[in-house]
Image 1 (spheres, rainbow, N blue to C red):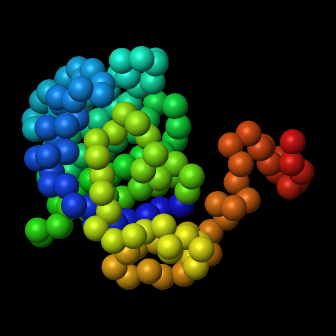
Image 2 (cartoon, helix red, strand yellow; image 1 turned 90 degrees about the vertical axis):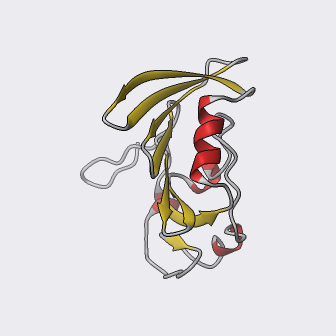
Length: 143
């Protein structure tokens, strides 16, 4: 599933929280040509997340799942693009605070697929058929 929505926080607030938070430990692993690669580790558990920070764009990835967040500026707005399972949206503890400007959850019951708060368009996708532990063989048999 892919969701794009506007968030209240500014890029500078998000970057500051990634680099210095009392909820996790951040380590800048690499910094070159305007790109900072940051590893975020939980104080209590062994949870890890990764952030790639540019001036006008941030990519966030939890190590434990295949979901990604892309935070970017569009004129005077800060937008977030989430690609991943519906149940994981805005639920990861090692990420900075991301507050949607509008309620995005009411759209899930009405649509499948790509969701944009500004211009929702119904698009057929197959997320409801995909399970993390299910493998599909070439002849459509499920293991």
